[in-house]
Image (cartoon, rainbow, N blue to C red; front, top):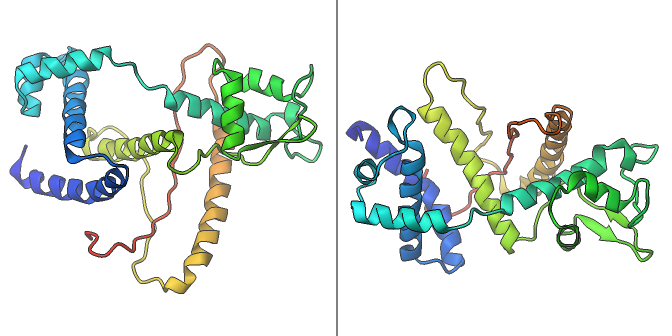
Length: 272
């Protein structure tokens, strides 16, 4: 690496690693476990994405890029090839699709445009029909249980279902919430990495912040309410646009979207 670039990269890594380390420590993950995970990710990424002229990256080049021995590279590659790929993101997507369909599909809307309370089953506008249309191949029983447990959907005494949220948000620090957090961080990091390493003729991807370091703490509740209202409204408009521009069934499509997060920094000694 160019020495003039190395220091800013390591400084940036130190900053984003601090909240990650805080989260890992609270979750009982040791530095050795994280180091082994990091080693594996370096090898998998170098193997998959750093071949020359589109060819797979050979072991010697992976070793050169990562600083590991060829024996370690082979060991990690063998382990990675036998590990199943996580399906968490796919199930999260289907949960969100069910909720979006309930809010946008006219078959499941009342005359005033609001989502209907749906009977559990039936030939028309039922909860079962909603799941068949939007849940894909995810088992319906497991998906319904998760939607109810997360507070996204409510099962009424007569057996019908009422939607409570437009977006699926798993409970804080349960397994799905943790897996979702990895997806959110990956999306943000992928956008930043693209903007830093893209070719001059490649378009950048939107990434920006609005922040101020001199806000009176008394305004925090008002800021939270403002963000919840405005950010949710924007996400719903984006969701509407995405839903009306889906590729026809059976055709390949792109994953597009945006992510929004609040900034609230009160940690003493947090690097600036």
